[in-house]
Image 1: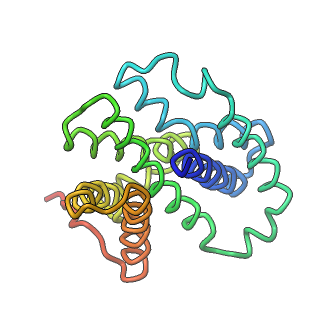
Image 2: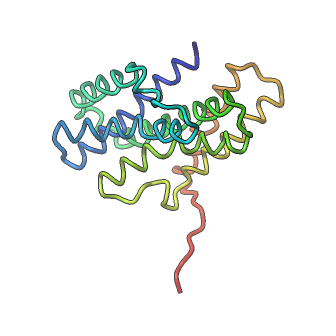
Length: 201
C-alpha cells in the first residue's frame, strides 16, 4: 500500500516539475503535457526497457498517466501561486528523485538483481525523466552539471541496504531512504556542495 502511494506521489511531483519547466520555456499546452509525461514517466520507461519489463508499466496500467494529466491541469491553473515559490520546481524535483530511486531499487529486488545494479537502476529511474525534460527544453541536464543530483540517489540507494542491515521495518526503510536522498539534495543546494569539475587545458 505504502509503495503504491509513494509511486503516485513521485509521479505527481515529477509531473509538476516538468509542467513548471515547460511553462518557464513558454510552451503551449501540448508542449507542456509532453514535457510533463516525459519527466514523470521517462525514467520508469527506460528502467522497464532495461530489465525487459515490456510493455512498459504505464502502457499496461494508465493510472499514472491519468495522474500526470491531472497534475498538468492543476499546475497550470495554480501556476501563478507556484511561480511565487521560487524553489517550488527544485522541491518537486527533489521529492521525485527520492521516491523514484526507491521504486527503481524495489523493481530490481523483485527480479533478484545484485544490490549494486539495483542502486544504479534506482538512479536511472530517478534521473532520466529529468534528463529527457532538460534535453527537450534545450538545456544541459541537471544530472550532468556540477550539482549533487545523481550522487544523492546513489548514496540514498546505498542507505537503503544499510537500513535493511539494521533490521528497520520495510516502511521505515522506504521512508528513511527517501528522506536521505531529499536531505542530501536539499543540503547540497543550501551549502552549494558540488562534485569537482574537470577543466580543459
